[in-house]
Image (cartoon, rainbow, N blue to C red; front, side, top):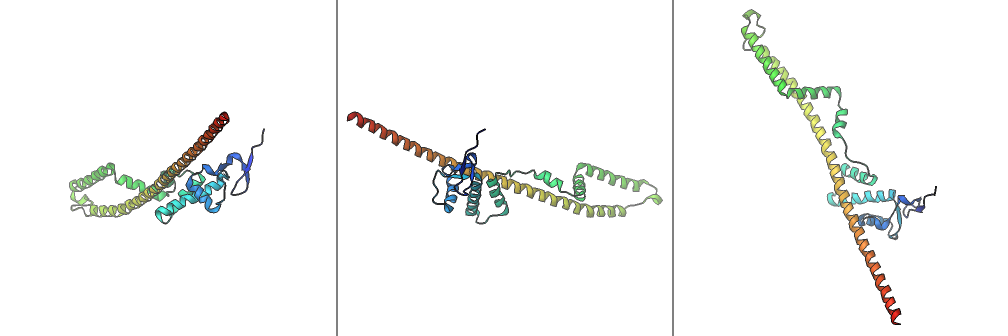
Amino acid sequence: MTRKERLRCAISGRELPRDELVPLDTVSSGIEAEIRTDYPQLDPAALISRAALARYRARHVESLLKAEKGELSDLDRQVAVSMATHETMAENTAAEFEGSRTFGERLADRFASFGGSWSFILLFLAALLLWAAVNATLPEPTRFDPYPFILLNLVLSCLAALQAPVIMMSQKRQEAKDRLRSQNDYRVNLKAELEIRHLHEKIDHLISRQWQRLAEIQQLQIEIMQDMARSRGG
C-alpha cells in the first residue's frame, strides 16, 4: 500500500494529504480576495487546506451579508458557520416542537382542537337542547333549573371563562411553532441563495482562467509555427 502524497498548506504550514488541499487559483474570486488581504504574496498555484478555506469562506459570507444588511443577526451567523462547515440547515421543526411540549400543553392543545370542531358544536347543542327540554317537561318540583335557566347561564359563563385562556395558550404555542418554521425557512433560503451565488462566482472564475490558458496555448502554437516557418525559410 503506497503512502499518500503529503504537501504543505500555504496558510497553516501543516503537511496534509493532497486530497485535503485546494489550489488557490480554483477558488472563487471573492474568497481569494479575502485570503489575499492576509496573504497578498501567495502564488496562484499555492495549495490551501480545506479547513483554512472554510474559515475564509465564512468570512466572505459575513462580508457579503454585512454589505447588504449592515448588521448580522444570529440567524445570519448560523448560516455563515453552516456554509463553512458544510452542515445541513434544514430541520424538522414540527418534531422538535412536539417533543418539547409538557403534559399540560398537550392537554390544552387537544382541548382547543376539540373545542374548535363540529363534534364539540353538535354535542354542545345537543346538551343545551336536552337541558332545556328536561327542565321544561319535568314536573315543577323536580326541575333543577327552571326557566329562565339561571344555572345553565352560570355553566355557560364558566365554560367560556375556562375555554378562552386554553385556546389562547394553544394559539401562542402555534405562533411559536410558526416562528420556528419561518426561521428555519429563512436560514435554508439564505444559505441556498449564497451557495448559488458562490457557485456562479466559481464558475465564472474557472471559465475566465480557462480562456486565459487557451489564449496562452494558442500563442505558443503561433510562436512554434513561426519558428518552424523561419527554419524552413533559412
